Length: 580
Image (cartoon, rainbow, N blue to C red; front, side, top):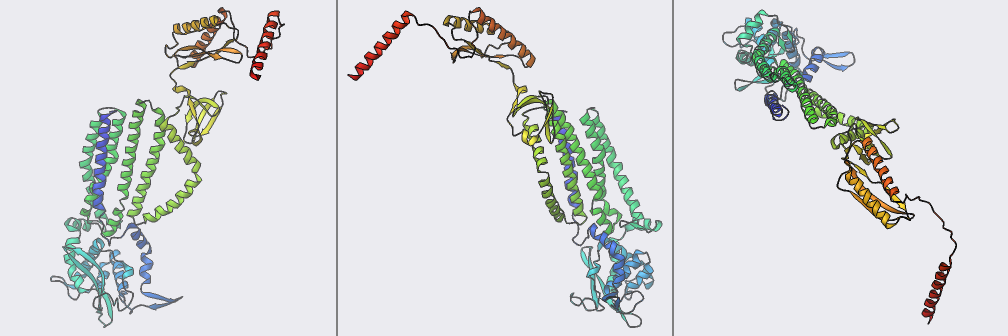
């Protein structure tokens, strides 16, 4: 599990994830250009009633309204009012009233005016499922649009693609019984309603269910559609849950913590994602309206499920690599892994939020631009914190010191107690706590005593200047022999040399290593060796030099006076010879 098996299972899990995320997502992103976004639907629903009530008049002056068409019981004087009146009646379920907005003069064979109520209902279903009517594009003039390329007595509401061809949904300027012209859905459009309904209607199951359940819609779906959708979800769950549960059970058989986490992911978030994706692929079975499609195009539940799955995978990676780092004796890096993966989770949630905002119709570019300006301000305000965080990353990755190490930095010495995200906590020799910001600590010259493999023994020995060469050779030989026989002194390198003449002493250089990492043991061994060296010097009949200035005053003897006079006479001879 620690090496190949764990990685192999993680790769399988990621493969399932990408197959379930990237491949199916492309299919639900193919939205028709005319399909509105959720933001548009919500805005339209908020402004719907005032919009419909105000279309029959034009605001010319304050508190003065002028009629925008002839007086009509159903407000059919201008195209926009006629369409708005039809939708208002149809949405309230008053299809008998809605039939008054249809031109029923040239009905298809087998239909009569009595079928106007059913035709108005079928038209409502067809329009709900296939055409988003932009009310603001419809004319507010009695004559309709004059530059749309259609005859003057017709206006275009929209176009529907079905059965491999395009159907124009038209309004027509037709006379009332009293000869006044009003706007209705054209007889050409009305004749095409049955044909369109066969393709875009509810189908046999929908028709049957809609007759027994109340006609109440929520989020663009009627009660019977919600029932049908729930049945689809249950059917998908019956298929997927046993498979994921079985897979989870097989993985749980090796009762390790990573296997248990992986089994929970498969039977939990991954199972939910699969159910939602398969349900989304079969969503057309409920014959949803455009409004319902818009709500589901937001993919809110799928995004939440994916975020849950991704965060669960991040937690799995956290556990997996924590164990791996601990097995490699890199416990200090585990501390950094937590904040790094927390940052990754925040980025995942943020990206999920951006995808959701884009799906419902908000401009992600505008959001990112605003966040970019805010991010610059935050970055400037938190510059030192960011520097310290980067310093913490450097300390964890480069690891010049670890928790518990004794080190020297600048003019301080102490033991590392904690490496935080802002600063490093150090216990000094005075038993005080010193907190150094990470940005400063990483730039210092750090001497880590915990990393050494042995202690160096190199005392400086200065013998009295009157020590004779024989005494010096004896001392050197005895010191080297005593170091060689000591069980804690390494054989190589080991040097004991007469290094030279000091100002007031004869200097001996010793260089060797003591095989220990314990400071207390090193102190005891070095003390024993120093005392033994003192015994060797004392037994040789000499002593350690005292660094003081000594003035010698002695009476001149006859021999010294003769030597002095001879030296003076010789100097006189040299000078006389140079003058000649």
